[in-house]
Image (cartoon, rainbow over all chains, first blue to last red; front, side):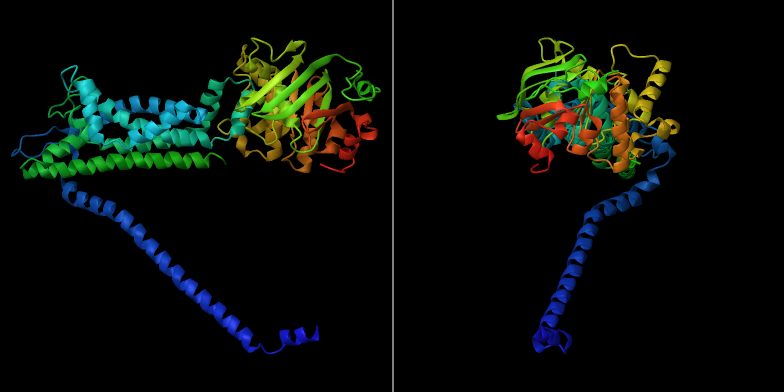
Length: 304
Length: 274
Protein backbone atom coordinates (compact mmCIF):
# COMPACT_ATOMS: atom_id res chain seq x y z
CA UNK A 1 0.00 0.00 0.00
CA UNK A 2 2.65 2.48 1.12
CA UNK A 3 5.06 1.35 -1.53
CA UNK A 4 2.60 1.89 -4.35
CA UNK A 5 1.50 5.30 -3.12
CA UNK A 6 5.10 6.44 -2.90
CA UNK A 7 5.73 5.24 -6.41
CA UNK A 8 2.52 6.87 -7.61
CA UNK A 9 3.14 10.37 -6.21
CA UNK A 10 6.90 10.55 -6.34
CA UNK A 11 9.05 11.44 -9.35
CA UNK A 12 8.39 9.09 -12.26
CA UNK A 13 10.83 6.25 -12.49
CA UNK A 14 13.00 5.81 -15.55
CA UNK A 15 10.87 2.98 -16.76
CA UNK A 16 7.71 5.04 -16.64
CA UNK A 17 9.34 7.84 -18.56
CA UNK A 18 10.40 5.37 -21.23
CA UNK A 19 6.82 4.14 -21.53
CA UNK A 20 5.47 7.69 -21.94
CA UNK A 21 8.04 8.49 -24.56
CA UNK A 22 7.25 5.40 -26.52
CA UNK A 23 3.53 6.25 -26.41
CA UNK A 24 4.22 9.75 -27.68
CA UNK A 25 6.34 8.41 -30.49
CA UNK A 26 3.55 6.05 -31.50
CA UNK A 27 1.01 8.87 -31.54
CA UNK A 28 3.32 11.06 -33.60
CA UNK A 29 3.88 8.27 -36.10
CA UNK A 30 0.15 7.67 -36.37
CA UNK A 31 -0.51 11.36 -36.97
CA UNK A 32 2.01 11.45 -39.79
CA UNK A 33 0.59 8.32 -41.37
CA UNK A 34 -2.94 9.66 -41.01
CA UNK A 35 -2.18 12.95 -42.75
CA UNK A 36 -0.33 11.09 -45.48
CA UNK A 37 -3.38 8.89 -46.12
CA UNK A 38 -5.79 11.82 -46.06
CA UNK A 39 -3.53 13.61 -48.54
CA UNK A 40 -3.55 10.59 -50.86
CA UNK A 41 -7.32 10.50 -50.72
CA UNK A 42 -7.51 14.16 -51.70
CA UNK A 43 -5.30 13.39 -54.68
CA UNK A 44 -7.49 10.41 -55.65
CA UNK A 45 -10.63 12.52 -55.36
CA UNK A 46 -9.09 15.25 -57.51
CA UNK A 47 -8.03 12.68 -60.13
CA UNK A 48 -11.53 11.25 -60.17
CA UNK A 49 -13.16 14.52 -61.15
CA UNK A 50 -10.28 15.71 -63.33
CA UNK A 51 -11.45 14.05 -66.59
CA UNK A 52 -14.93 15.53 -66.24
CA UNK A 53 -13.47 18.93 -65.51
CA UNK A 54 -11.13 18.75 -68.53
CA UNK A 55 -13.92 17.57 -70.81
CA UNK A 56 -16.31 20.31 -69.73
CA UNK A 57 -13.63 23.03 -70.06
CA UNK A 58 -12.64 21.70 -73.47
CA UNK A 59 -16.24 21.51 -74.66
CA UNK A 60 -17.00 25.01 -73.47
CA UNK A 61 -13.84 26.38 -75.12
CA UNK A 62 -14.56 24.77 -78.47
CA UNK A 63 -18.33 24.50 -78.50
CA UNK A 64 -19.73 27.43 -76.57
CA UNK A 65 -19.33 29.90 -79.43
CA UNK A 66 -21.56 27.76 -81.67
CA UNK A 67 -24.26 27.26 -79.05
CA UNK A 68 -26.66 30.06 -79.85
CA UNK A 69 -30.37 30.45 -80.47
CA UNK A 70 -30.00 29.21 -84.05
CA UNK A 71 -28.38 26.02 -82.80
CA UNK A 72 -31.58 25.08 -80.99
CA UNK A 73 -34.04 26.31 -83.61
CA UNK A 74 -32.47 25.68 -87.01
CA UNK A 75 -31.59 22.66 -89.08
CA UNK A 76 -28.21 21.70 -90.40
CA UNK A 77 -26.85 23.64 -93.37
CA UNK A 78 -24.50 22.50 -96.12
CA UNK A 79 -20.84 23.18 -95.44
CA UNK A 80 -19.78 26.62 -96.64
CA UNK A 81 -23.06 28.33 -95.83
CA UNK A 82 -22.24 28.58 -92.15
CA UNK A 83 -24.70 28.87 -89.25
CA UNK A 84 -27.50 26.39 -88.84
CA UNK A 85 -28.16 24.13 -85.89
CA UNK A 86 -29.21 20.78 -84.60
CA UNK A 87 -32.87 21.36 -83.76
CA UNK A 88 -33.84 18.06 -85.39
CA UNK A 89 -31.15 16.12 -83.51
CA UNK A 90 -32.11 17.63 -80.14
CA UNK A 91 -35.79 16.84 -80.66
CA UNK A 92 -34.85 13.41 -82.02
CA UNK A 93 -32.78 12.59 -78.94
CA UNK A 94 -35.63 13.66 -76.64
CA UNK A 95 -38.09 11.49 -78.61
CA UNK A 96 -35.75 8.50 -78.46
CA UNK A 97 -35.24 8.97 -74.70
CA UNK A 98 -39.02 9.10 -74.29
CA UNK A 99 -39.53 5.88 -76.26
CA UNK A 100 -36.71 4.18 -74.35
CA UNK A 101 -38.25 5.22 -71.02
CA UNK A 102 -41.68 4.09 -72.16
CA UNK A 103 -40.25 0.64 -72.85
CA UNK A 104 -37.57 0.38 -70.17
CA UNK A 105 -39.24 1.83 -67.08
CA UNK A 106 -42.40 -0.33 -66.88
CA UNK A 107 -40.48 -3.51 -67.65
CA UNK A 108 -37.58 -2.64 -65.35
CA UNK A 109 -39.73 -1.53 -62.42
CA UNK A 110 -42.02 -4.53 -62.80
CA UNK A 111 -39.09 -6.94 -62.93
CA UNK A 112 -37.40 -5.23 -59.96
CA UNK A 113 -40.59 -5.51 -57.92
CA UNK A 114 -40.83 -9.18 -58.84
CA UNK A 115 -37.22 -9.84 -57.80
CA UNK A 116 -37.69 -8.05 -54.48
CA UNK A 117 -40.89 -9.95 -53.71
CA UNK A 118 -39.67 -13.39 -54.74
CA UNK A 119 -36.04 -13.08 -53.63
CA UNK A 120 -34.81 -16.66 -53.61
CA UNK A 121 -36.91 -18.64 -56.07
CA UNK A 122 -35.12 -20.31 -58.96
CA UNK A 123 -36.67 -17.95 -61.50
CA UNK A 124 -35.82 -14.83 -59.48
CA UNK A 125 -32.18 -15.87 -59.11
CA UNK A 126 -31.98 -16.56 -62.84
CA UNK A 127 -33.59 -13.27 -63.80
CA UNK A 128 -31.26 -11.40 -61.45
CA UNK A 129 -28.21 -13.04 -62.98
CA UNK A 130 -29.41 -12.41 -66.55
CA UNK A 131 -30.11 -8.76 -65.71
CA UNK A 132 -26.50 -8.40 -64.60
CA UNK A 133 -25.27 -10.02 -67.80
CA UNK A 134 -27.52 -7.76 -69.87
CA UNK A 135 -26.15 -4.77 -67.96
CA UNK A 136 -22.66 -5.69 -69.08
CA UNK A 137 -23.63 -6.32 -72.70
CA UNK A 138 -21.66 -4.10 -75.12
CA UNK A 139 -24.05 -1.55 -76.56
CA UNK A 140 -22.99 -2.29 -80.13
CA UNK A 141 -24.28 -5.84 -79.66
CA UNK A 142 -27.59 -4.44 -78.48
CA UNK A 143 -27.67 -2.32 -81.65
CA UNK A 144 -27.01 -5.25 -83.99
CA UNK A 145 -29.64 -7.30 -82.23
CA UNK A 146 -32.20 -4.49 -82.51
CA UNK A 147 -31.37 -4.16 -86.21
CA UNK A 148 -31.88 -7.87 -86.78
CA UNK A 149 -35.17 -7.85 -84.91
CA UNK A 150 -36.74 -4.47 -85.59
CA UNK A 151 -35.13 -3.00 -88.69
CA UNK A 152 -34.44 -5.92 -91.03
CA UNK A 153 -37.97 -7.37 -91.07
CA UNK A 154 -39.61 -4.01 -91.91
CA UNK A 155 -36.78 -2.98 -94.23
CA UNK A 156 -36.34 0.55 -92.90
CA UNK A 157 -34.63 2.30 -90.01
CA UNK A 158 -36.88 3.89 -87.40
CA UNK A 159 -36.96 6.01 -84.26
CA UNK A 160 -38.97 3.23 -82.67
CA UNK A 161 -36.19 0.69 -83.20
CA UNK A 162 -33.63 3.09 -81.69
CA UNK A 163 -35.84 3.81 -78.68
CA UNK A 164 -36.52 0.14 -78.06
CA UNK A 165 -32.81 -0.71 -78.28
CA UNK A 166 -32.00 1.95 -75.66
CA UNK A 167 -35.04 0.89 -73.60
CA UNK A 168 -33.66 -2.65 -73.49
CA UNK A 169 -30.41 -1.20 -72.13
CA UNK A 170 -32.35 0.63 -69.41
CA UNK A 171 -34.17 -2.50 -68.24
CA UNK A 172 -31.36 -4.15 -66.24
CA UNK A 173 -30.29 -0.85 -64.63
CA UNK A 174 -33.83 0.01 -63.57
CA UNK A 175 -34.50 -3.57 -62.47
CA UNK A 176 -31.58 -3.66 -60.07
CA UNK A 177 -32.15 -0.22 -58.53
CA UNK A 178 -35.86 -0.95 -58.13
CA UNK A 179 -35.06 -4.23 -56.42
CA UNK A 180 -32.62 -2.54 -54.04
CA UNK A 181 -35.04 0.25 -53.20
CA UNK A 182 -38.00 -2.09 -52.65
CA UNK A 183 -35.88 -4.27 -50.40
CA UNK A 184 -35.14 -1.26 -48.23
CA UNK A 185 -38.83 -1.00 -47.36
CA UNK A 186 -39.12 -2.63 -43.92
CA UNK A 187 -40.96 -5.94 -43.78
CA UNK A 188 -43.05 -4.53 -40.94
CA UNK A 189 -44.79 -2.15 -43.37
CA UNK A 190 -45.62 -5.05 -45.64
CA UNK A 191 -47.03 -6.98 -42.69
CA UNK A 192 -49.05 -3.99 -41.52
CA UNK A 193 -50.71 -3.75 -44.92
CA UNK A 194 -51.36 -7.49 -45.13
CA UNK A 195 -52.83 -7.49 -41.61
CA UNK A 196 -55.16 -4.71 -42.69
CA UNK A 197 -56.58 -6.98 -45.38
CA UNK A 198 -54.51 -5.80 -48.34
CA UNK A 199 -53.96 -8.46 -50.94
CA UNK A 200 -50.40 -9.29 -51.94
CA UNK A 201 -50.38 -7.32 -55.18
CA UNK A 202 -52.11 -4.37 -53.57
CA UNK A 203 -49.55 -4.34 -50.76
CA UNK A 204 -46.76 -4.42 -53.32
CA UNK A 205 -48.19 -1.60 -55.42
CA UNK A 206 -49.83 0.84 -53.04
CA UNK A 207 -47.64 0.42 -49.96
CA UNK A 208 -44.24 -1.01 -50.89
CA UNK A 209 -43.79 0.60 -54.29
CA UNK A 210 -45.12 3.91 -53.07
CA UNK A 211 -42.72 3.95 -50.14
CA UNK A 212 -39.78 3.14 -52.41
CA UNK A 213 -40.86 5.57 -55.12
CA UNK A 214 -38.26 8.28 -54.39
CA UNK A 215 -35.38 5.85 -54.87
CA UNK A 216 -36.94 4.29 -57.94
CA UNK A 217 -37.40 7.69 -59.59
CA UNK A 218 -33.75 8.44 -58.91
CA UNK A 219 -32.70 5.13 -60.43
CA UNK A 220 -34.89 5.75 -63.48
CA UNK A 221 -33.36 9.19 -64.06
CA UNK A 222 -29.83 7.86 -63.70
CA UNK A 223 -30.64 5.19 -66.30
CA UNK A 224 -32.06 7.85 -68.64
CA UNK A 225 -28.90 9.91 -68.26
CA UNK A 226 -26.83 6.81 -69.03
CA UNK A 227 -28.60 6.04 -72.32
CA UNK A 228 -29.00 9.65 -73.48
CA UNK A 229 -25.51 9.66 -74.96
CA UNK A 230 -25.47 6.10 -76.34
CA UNK A 231 -24.41 6.08 -79.98
CA UNK A 232 -23.67 2.50 -80.98
CA UNK A 233 -27.19 1.09 -80.63
CA UNK A 234 -28.54 3.97 -82.72
CA UNK A 235 -26.16 3.46 -85.64
CA UNK A 236 -28.21 0.67 -87.20
CA UNK A 237 -31.60 1.55 -85.75
CA UNK A 238 -32.41 5.26 -85.68
CA UNK A 239 -29.71 5.85 -88.30
CA UNK A 240 -29.87 9.65 -88.15
CA UNK A 241 -31.62 12.07 -90.41
CA UNK A 242 -30.47 15.37 -91.86
CA UNK A 243 -34.02 16.61 -92.20
CA UNK A 244 -36.69 17.48 -89.71
CA UNK A 245 -38.59 14.34 -88.76
CA UNK A 246 -40.61 13.29 -85.76
CA UNK A 247 -42.11 10.20 -87.42
CA UNK A 248 -41.59 7.19 -85.15
CA UNK A 249 -41.53 4.81 -88.10
CA UNK A 250 -38.85 6.64 -90.03
CA UNK A 251 -35.18 7.32 -89.43
CA UNK A 252 -34.67 10.11 -86.93
CA UNK A 253 -31.80 12.42 -86.04
CA UNK A 254 -30.10 12.09 -82.66
CA UNK A 255 -27.40 14.20 -81.03
CA UNK A 256 -24.82 11.43 -80.61
CA UNK A 257 -25.22 10.41 -84.27
CA UNK A 258 -25.05 13.97 -85.49
CA UNK A 259 -21.91 14.57 -83.45
CA UNK A 260 -20.36 11.45 -84.95
CA UNK A 261 -21.23 12.42 -88.53
CA UNK A 262 -20.01 15.99 -88.12
CA UNK A 263 -16.82 14.94 -86.35
CA UNK A 264 -15.74 12.62 -89.17
CA UNK A 265 -16.56 15.23 -91.83
CA UNK A 266 -13.76 17.31 -93.33
CA UNK A 267 -15.41 20.71 -92.70
CA UNK A 268 -14.27 23.03 -89.91
CA UNK A 269 -17.67 24.61 -89.37
CA UNK A 270 -19.19 21.15 -88.93
CA UNK A 271 -16.46 20.33 -86.40
CA UNK A 272 -17.49 23.39 -84.43
CA UNK A 273 -21.11 22.25 -84.60
CA UNK A 274 -20.06 18.81 -83.35
CA UNK A 275 -18.40 20.38 -80.32
CA UNK A 276 -21.52 22.41 -79.67
CA UNK A 277 -23.65 19.28 -79.98
CA UNK A 278 -21.42 17.51 -77.46
CA UNK A 279 -21.80 20.41 -75.07
CA UNK A 280 -25.59 20.33 -75.38
CA UNK A 281 -25.64 16.56 -74.89
CA UNK A 282 -23.56 16.87 -71.73
CA UNK A 283 -25.97 19.61 -70.67
CA UNK A 284 -28.97 17.28 -71.11
CA UNK A 285 -27.24 14.53 -69.09
CA UNK A 286 -26.33 17.10 -66.44
CA UNK A 287 -29.93 18.29 -66.13
CA UNK A 288 -31.26 14.72 -65.81
CA UNK A 289 -28.63 13.89 -63.16
CA UNK A 290 -29.52 17.04 -61.29
CA UNK A 291 -33.17 16.03 -61.33
CA UNK A 292 -32.11 12.65 -59.92
CA UNK A 293 -30.29 14.39 -57.07
CA UNK A 294 -33.30 16.52 -56.27
CA UNK A 295 -35.54 13.44 -56.25
CA UNK A 296 -33.13 11.72 -53.85
CA UNK A 297 -32.98 14.70 -51.55
CA UNK A 298 -36.77 14.89 -51.37
CA UNK A 299 -36.91 11.20 -50.47
CA UNK A 300 -34.68 11.60 -47.45
CA UNK A 301 -36.31 14.86 -46.42
CA UNK A 302 -39.80 13.33 -46.46
CA UNK A 303 -39.36 11.89 -42.97
CA UNK A 304 -39.70 15.19 -41.18
CA UNK B 1 -72.98 -6.29 -18.73
CA UNK B 2 -71.44 -9.21 -17.04
CA UNK B 3 -67.91 -9.08 -18.30
CA UNK B 4 -66.42 -8.66 -14.84
CA UNK B 5 -68.55 -11.56 -13.64
CA UNK B 6 -67.22 -13.61 -16.47
CA UNK B 7 -63.71 -12.80 -15.46
CA UNK B 8 -64.15 -13.62 -11.82
CA UNK B 9 -66.26 -16.69 -12.32
CA UNK B 10 -64.55 -19.76 -10.90
CA UNK B 11 -62.60 -21.64 -13.46
CA UNK B 12 -62.94 -25.34 -13.79
CA UNK B 13 -59.72 -26.45 -12.21
CA UNK B 14 -57.05 -27.82 -14.47
CA UNK B 15 -55.81 -26.55 -17.77
CA UNK B 16 -57.45 -25.05 -20.84
CA UNK B 17 -60.53 -23.89 -19.04
CA UNK B 18 -63.02 -22.01 -21.16
CA UNK B 19 -64.68 -18.85 -19.88
CA UNK B 20 -67.90 -19.94 -18.31
CA UNK B 21 -70.24 -17.20 -19.46
CA UNK B 22 -70.83 -15.20 -22.67
CA UNK B 23 -70.60 -16.58 -26.15
CA UNK B 24 -67.40 -17.91 -27.64
CA UNK B 25 -66.04 -15.73 -30.45
CA UNK B 26 -62.91 -17.67 -31.31
CA UNK B 27 -62.54 -21.38 -30.74
CA UNK B 28 -59.10 -22.83 -31.35
CA UNK B 29 -58.81 -26.60 -31.60
CA UNK B 30 -55.60 -28.66 -31.90
CA UNK B 31 -53.66 -25.80 -33.49
CA UNK B 32 -50.12 -26.54 -34.64
CA UNK B 33 -47.80 -24.05 -36.28
CA UNK B 34 -44.41 -24.70 -37.83
CA UNK B 35 -41.47 -22.78 -39.24
CA UNK B 36 -39.92 -25.33 -41.55
CA UNK B 37 -39.09 -28.21 -39.23
CA UNK B 38 -39.53 -26.17 -36.04
CA UNK B 39 -42.76 -26.95 -34.26
CA UNK B 40 -43.51 -23.51 -32.79
CA UNK B 41 -47.07 -23.97 -31.51
CA UNK B 42 -48.09 -27.40 -30.23
CA UNK B 43 -51.60 -28.76 -29.96
CA UNK B 44 -53.21 -25.62 -28.62
CA UNK B 45 -56.93 -25.60 -27.88
CA UNK B 46 -58.58 -22.62 -26.26
CA UNK B 47 -61.80 -20.61 -26.40
CA UNK B 48 -61.90 -16.83 -26.42
CA UNK B 49 -65.09 -15.21 -25.17
CA UNK B 50 -66.83 -12.47 -27.08
CA UNK B 51 -65.93 -8.96 -25.90
CA UNK B 52 -63.23 -10.02 -23.53
CA UNK B 53 -59.53 -9.34 -23.28
CA UNK B 54 -57.24 -12.34 -23.31
CA UNK B 55 -53.61 -11.85 -22.37
CA UNK B 56 -50.99 -14.28 -23.58
CA UNK B 57 -47.88 -14.51 -21.44
CA UNK B 58 -44.78 -16.63 -21.46
CA UNK B 59 -41.02 -16.42 -21.86
CA UNK B 60 -39.41 -15.32 -25.15
CA UNK B 61 -39.64 -17.88 -27.90
CA UNK B 62 -42.54 -19.76 -26.32
CA UNK B 63 -44.71 -19.39 -29.42
CA UNK B 64 -47.11 -16.76 -28.15
CA UNK B 65 -46.60 -14.35 -31.06
CA UNK B 66 -46.78 -17.21 -33.54
CA UNK B 67 -50.03 -18.33 -31.94
CA UNK B 68 -51.39 -14.79 -32.25
CA UNK B 69 -50.38 -14.63 -35.90
CA UNK B 70 -52.29 -17.86 -36.55
CA UNK B 71 -55.51 -16.13 -35.52
CA UNK B 72 -55.51 -13.83 -38.57
CA UNK B 73 -53.52 -16.07 -40.91
CA UNK B 74 -50.46 -13.83 -40.79
CA UNK B 75 -48.28 -16.79 -39.84
CA UNK B 76 -48.47 -18.21 -43.35
CA UNK B 77 -46.98 -15.03 -44.87
CA UNK B 78 -43.58 -16.19 -43.64
CA UNK B 79 -41.79 -18.52 -46.09
CA UNK B 80 -41.76 -22.18 -44.96
CA UNK B 81 -44.46 -21.51 -42.34
CA UNK B 82 -47.24 -24.05 -41.95
CA UNK B 83 -50.37 -24.37 -39.84
CA UNK B 84 -52.76 -27.19 -39.07
CA UNK B 85 -55.70 -27.47 -36.74
CA UNK B 86 -58.83 -25.38 -36.60
CA UNK B 87 -59.55 -21.77 -35.68
CA UNK B 88 -63.27 -21.07 -35.60
CA UNK B 89 -64.30 -17.44 -35.81
CA UNK B 90 -68.01 -17.27 -35.02
CA UNK B 91 -68.25 -20.91 -35.97
CA UNK B 92 -66.47 -20.60 -39.32
CA UNK B 93 -63.08 -22.20 -39.74
CA UNK B 94 -60.73 -19.45 -40.95
CA UNK B 95 -58.48 -22.16 -42.38
CA UNK B 96 -61.45 -23.78 -44.11
CA UNK B 97 -61.53 -24.45 -47.81
CA UNK B 98 -62.27 -21.43 -49.97
CA UNK B 99 -61.72 -18.94 -47.14
CA UNK B 100 -59.34 -16.21 -48.28
CA UNK B 101 -56.75 -14.95 -45.79
CA UNK B 102 -57.48 -11.42 -47.01
CA UNK B 103 -61.12 -11.72 -45.93
CA UNK B 104 -60.06 -13.09 -42.53
CA UNK B 105 -57.64 -10.21 -41.94
CA UNK B 106 -60.35 -7.67 -42.66
CA UNK B 107 -62.33 -9.07 -39.75
CA UNK B 108 -59.42 -9.64 -37.43
CA UNK B 109 -57.33 -6.50 -36.95
CA UNK B 110 -53.73 -6.54 -35.77
CA UNK B 111 -51.29 -4.11 -34.18
CA UNK B 112 -47.60 -4.90 -34.01
CA UNK B 113 -44.84 -4.38 -31.50
CA UNK B 114 -43.35 -1.43 -33.33
CA UNK B 115 -45.56 1.33 -34.72
CA UNK B 116 -45.99 0.87 -38.48
CA UNK B 117 -47.59 4.02 -39.91
CA UNK B 118 -47.37 4.16 -43.70
CA UNK B 119 -44.68 6.82 -44.23
CA UNK B 120 -46.00 8.11 -47.55
CA UNK B 121 -49.46 8.77 -46.14
CA UNK B 122 -50.91 11.53 -44.02
CA UNK B 123 -52.48 10.79 -40.64
CA UNK B 124 -55.89 10.83 -42.26
CA UNK B 125 -54.88 8.52 -45.11
CA UNK B 126 -53.33 6.13 -42.61
CA UNK B 127 -56.57 5.74 -40.69
CA UNK B 128 -58.47 5.37 -43.96
CA UNK B 129 -55.99 2.82 -45.36
CA UNK B 130 -58.21 -0.12 -44.46
CA UNK B 131 -61.37 1.63 -45.66
CA UNK B 132 -60.22 2.31 -49.21
CA UNK B 133 -59.87 -1.41 -49.87
CA UNK B 134 -63.20 -2.37 -48.27
CA UNK B 135 -65.85 -4.02 -50.44
CA UNK B 136 -68.28 -1.25 -49.68
CA UNK B 137 -66.19 1.87 -49.76
CA UNK B 138 -67.79 4.58 -47.60
CA UNK B 139 -68.58 7.99 -49.12
CA UNK B 140 -66.46 11.04 -48.38
CA UNK B 141 -68.57 12.28 -45.48
CA UNK B 142 -68.95 8.84 -44.00
CA UNK B 143 -65.18 8.38 -44.23
CA UNK B 144 -64.62 11.60 -42.28
CA UNK B 145 -66.94 10.37 -39.55
CA UNK B 146 -65.32 6.95 -39.41
CA UNK B 147 -61.86 8.51 -39.18
CA UNK B 148 -62.92 10.82 -36.36
CA UNK B 149 -64.56 7.96 -34.49
CA UNK B 150 -61.56 5.67 -34.89
CA UNK B 151 -59.15 8.37 -33.72
CA UNK B 152 -61.40 9.13 -30.74
CA UNK B 153 -61.55 5.48 -29.80
CA UNK B 154 -57.78 5.34 -29.98
CA UNK B 155 -57.59 8.45 -27.74
CA UNK B 156 -55.64 10.33 -30.38
CA UNK B 157 -58.24 12.69 -31.83
CA UNK B 158 -57.48 15.70 -29.63
CA UNK B 159 -53.78 15.49 -30.41
CA UNK B 160 -54.08 15.27 -34.19
CA UNK B 161 -57.38 16.90 -35.15
CA UNK B 162 -55.60 20.01 -36.41
CA UNK B 163 -53.03 18.20 -38.48
CA UNK B 164 -54.82 15.30 -40.12
CA UNK B 165 -53.23 16.13 -43.46
CA UNK B 166 -49.64 16.11 -42.21
CA UNK B 167 -47.30 13.13 -42.46
CA UNK B 168 -47.85 10.36 -39.94
CA UNK B 169 -44.11 10.03 -39.40
CA UNK B 170 -44.14 13.38 -37.60
CA UNK B 171 -45.95 11.83 -34.65
CA UNK B 172 -44.21 10.51 -31.53
CA UNK B 173 -43.80 6.77 -31.06
CA UNK B 174 -46.75 6.53 -28.69
CA UNK B 175 -48.94 8.56 -31.01
CA UNK B 176 -47.89 6.42 -33.96
CA UNK B 177 -48.89 3.28 -32.09
CA UNK B 178 -52.30 4.74 -31.23
CA UNK B 179 -52.60 5.75 -34.88
CA UNK B 180 -52.02 2.12 -35.82
CA UNK B 181 -54.71 1.07 -33.36
CA UNK B 182 -57.05 3.66 -34.90
CA UNK B 183 -56.20 2.31 -38.34
CA UNK B 184 -57.07 -1.21 -37.21
CA UNK B 185 -60.31 -0.04 -35.57
CA UNK B 186 -61.52 2.02 -38.54
CA UNK B 187 -62.70 -1.07 -40.40
CA UNK B 188 -64.67 -2.23 -37.34
CA UNK B 189 -62.97 -5.58 -36.82
CA UNK B 190 -64.65 -8.13 -34.55
CA UNK B 191 -61.34 -9.16 -33.11
CA UNK B 192 -58.22 -7.12 -32.42
CA UNK B 193 -54.85 -8.82 -32.00
CA UNK B 194 -52.12 -6.87 -30.22
CA UNK B 195 -48.55 -8.18 -30.39
CA UNK B 196 -46.71 -6.51 -27.50
CA UNK B 197 -48.26 -3.17 -28.41
CA UNK B 198 -46.48 -1.22 -25.69
CA UNK B 199 -43.05 -2.84 -25.88
CA UNK B 200 -41.48 0.15 -27.61
CA UNK B 201 -43.43 2.87 -25.79
CA UNK B 202 -42.69 5.12 -22.84
CA UNK B 203 -44.69 4.68 -19.59
CA UNK B 204 -47.20 7.46 -20.31
CA UNK B 205 -47.98 6.21 -23.80
CA UNK B 206 -48.19 2.70 -22.37
CA UNK B 207 -50.75 3.84 -19.86
CA UNK B 208 -52.84 5.45 -22.57
CA UNK B 209 -52.77 2.32 -24.69
CA UNK B 210 -53.71 0.20 -21.68
CA UNK B 211 -56.66 2.42 -20.88
CA UNK B 212 -57.66 2.14 -24.49
CA UNK B 213 -57.52 -1.66 -24.39
CA UNK B 214 -59.61 -1.65 -21.24
CA UNK B 215 -62.29 0.40 -22.97
CA UNK B 216 -62.22 -1.58 -26.19
CA UNK B 217 -63.58 -4.68 -24.53
CA UNK B 218 -67.10 -3.24 -24.60
CA UNK B 219 -67.32 -3.96 -28.32
CA UNK B 220 -64.26 -5.86 -29.51
CA UNK B 221 -62.66 -9.16 -28.63
CA UNK B 222 -59.04 -8.40 -27.80
CA UNK B 223 -56.08 -10.77 -27.65
CA UNK B 224 -52.85 -9.24 -26.37
CA UNK B 225 -49.40 -10.76 -26.22
CA UNK B 226 -47.32 -9.15 -23.51
CA UNK B 227 -44.05 -9.60 -21.68
CA UNK B 228 -45.31 -7.40 -18.90
CA UNK B 229 -47.12 -9.45 -16.28
CA UNK B 230 -48.51 -6.37 -14.55
CA UNK B 231 -49.95 -5.31 -17.85
CA UNK B 232 -51.61 -8.67 -18.32
CA UNK B 233 -53.06 -8.38 -14.83
CA UNK B 234 -54.28 -4.83 -15.44
CA UNK B 235 -56.00 -5.19 -18.78
CA UNK B 236 -57.14 -8.76 -19.26
CA UNK B 237 -60.12 -10.88 -18.24
CA UNK B 238 -58.45 -14.12 -19.09
CA UNK B 239 -54.78 -15.07 -19.20
CA UNK B 240 -53.08 -17.86 -21.12
CA UNK B 241 -49.60 -19.07 -20.24
CA UNK B 242 -47.44 -20.53 -23.02
CA UNK B 243 -44.23 -22.48 -22.58
CA UNK B 244 -42.24 -24.27 -25.24
CA UNK B 245 -45.02 -23.90 -27.80
CA UNK B 246 -47.63 -25.44 -25.53
CA UNK B 247 -50.53 -23.81 -23.79
CA UNK B 248 -49.81 -24.68 -20.17
CA UNK B 249 -52.75 -23.02 -18.54
CA UNK B 250 -55.57 -20.63 -19.27
CA UNK B 251 -57.76 -19.15 -16.57
CA UNK B 252 -59.51 -15.96 -15.52
CA UNK B 253 -56.76 -13.45 -14.87
CA UNK B 254 -57.52 -13.13 -11.17
CA UNK B 255 -57.27 -16.85 -10.63
CA UNK B 256 -54.18 -17.06 -12.74
CA UNK B 257 -52.28 -14.49 -10.72
CA UNK B 258 -53.48 -15.61 -7.30
CA UNK B 259 -53.71 -19.37 -7.49
CA UNK B 260 -52.40 -20.84 -10.71
CA UNK B 261 -52.98 -24.55 -10.95
CA UNK B 262 -49.79 -25.47 -12.76
CA UNK B 263 -46.46 -25.35 -11.01
CA UNK B 264 -44.70 -23.92 -14.08
CA UNK B 265 -47.20 -21.06 -14.29
CA UNK B 266 -46.53 -20.24 -10.69
CA UNK B 267 -42.78 -20.26 -11.21
CA UNK B 268 -43.09 -17.92 -14.19
CA UNK B 269 -45.48 -15.53 -12.52
CA UNK B 270 -43.39 -15.32 -9.39
CA UNK B 271 -40.34 -14.62 -11.48
CA UNK B 272 -38.41 -17.81 -11.00
CA UNK B 273 -37.66 -18.07 -14.73
CA UNK B 274 -38.33 -16.29 -17.98
